[in-house]
Image (tube, rainbow, N blue to C red; front, side, top):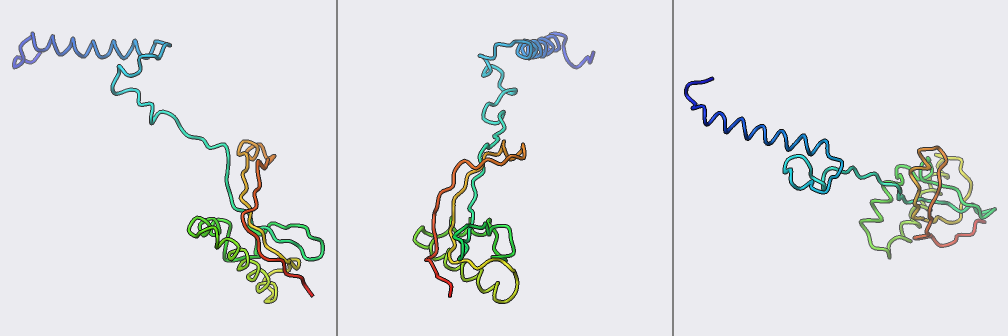
Length: 162
């Protein structure tokens, strides 16, 4: 022992350390966690849980085929390059809802211009629709994607092809 410290101070220090360690051991071994707040360093409920979202929310761009009326998804394709679903989501967050149909009109024009210039061989479309889609992430992980909802948020005006 160090002669600079009296035995009494060392005994108090060892006693405090033993008290803290015994308190920690009781806390760790006790299944009844109703007194988490009594240990100030160990448990912070605000940071102790990891948030795992179960729903993915995305914007989906669909084109209506002129001849059949069927929809094709335009998000992840060459059809509306350089824009992606993420770019469109950002635009929808930034602008007011009154401009959503204008965005759909612009995407229809972009699709048609790219087709005329030979950038893609997609079908002739007469309309573009924007949807807000929710997916169950657990089903996506199982490779069985399950769409929870699909809500129309905007559409371009119908253009009949000649």
